[in-house]
Length: 116
Length: 119
Image 1 (tube, chains in turn brown, green):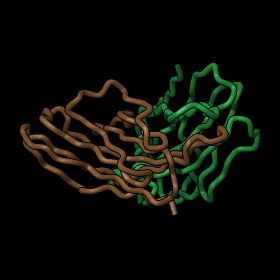
Image 2: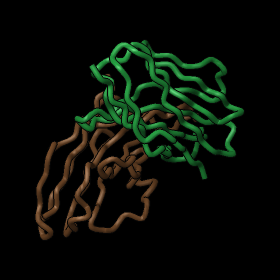
Image 3: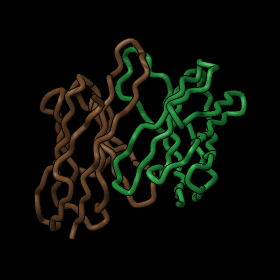
């Protein structure tokens, strides 16, 4: 089973709203990722959590706030977003990096976010 | 830094025929992994195939196979007996080997090739 789930599928929010995206996996993976993807472009890495600790932040604006409550869950809290933040937000997970094994990332279906 | 280049923004193929998507990459690493992901109109990113750089044998997954040329830094994807469901954006991606103690693996993506399978 290589399933990563994301909720909601679609989200429309105003620039003053606060909302959250949720990602869940039950594969025992210890690394989780947030990506942003614009139409017809490859995904851009935003954050990486490794063993529930934030290990990579790709200089993402503070209006995006990640959270990893446990090894299965990853949230992305959104506040005061701009219209240019409208995109598909993808979550991914991988085994994690114990012993230098290959670390294939499996993606969720994404949340399509529209900021008005 | 690594770069991945997909030189064919769009391709089309007739159903049941074979098509090859190109990918080249640039790296100074010796241990790494290469991937092909497909993203159909539903936008779900799906792993198609994976290749370990230390393996000389080309990876295959049913109708999908790769031609991995390490010296040339080339990693093409061949789709045999194309099906309508193969219509998707295909991304080639590079990941360097992660050693114990490092945290987080980075995927470097190419710009993608939009493949359309025609009936």
